[in-house]
Amino acid sequence: MSILSLKDGSPVRAQVDQQIPWPQKAPAACPISAVKSRLRSVGLRPTRQRMALGWLLFAKGDRHVSAEMLYEEALRAREPLSLATVYNTLRQFSEAGLLRQVSVSGPKTFFDTNVSEHHHFYNEDDESVVDIPGSEIHVSGLPVAPEGMLISSVEVIVRLRRADGEETVTKVAGGHRA
Image (cartoon, rainbow, N blue to C red; front, top):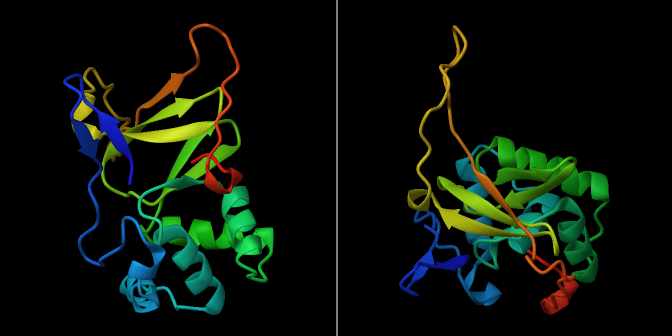
């Protein structure tokens, strides 16, 4: 789960979907039946590939992963999947509302398991993404939508980099940044 600190130092946790009891810490706490129920609830057939990727995605709580990161996790878990299958499954999960796509830089896209309304910090130095609660940013002065269209959402991505210009070196378990 993503945690941010407010100015007073108190932690803020991102909202968690309460329909299915996704775990926030231990993968063992996420029964495979929860993954199957989640897929069926959005009209997706729980194939072996979807179940495997759903388990890898949702068993660790709210996080941001790229297709390449998820593919590497699947390889380490000895799941025989192609990178194309990972991309297709992430697209299907996004279209079904299980994930949010966060495009941060050109073709660089992360998939966010937190589908609530919120924004993101993107650290350009280490390519990490962190949630910003939706209530932390207020957007005003939006243009009028073109005729026949309406604004469905607004997402703010705040780009960060070290002020001193030094390179950031981040070590994260499993060799991934999320």
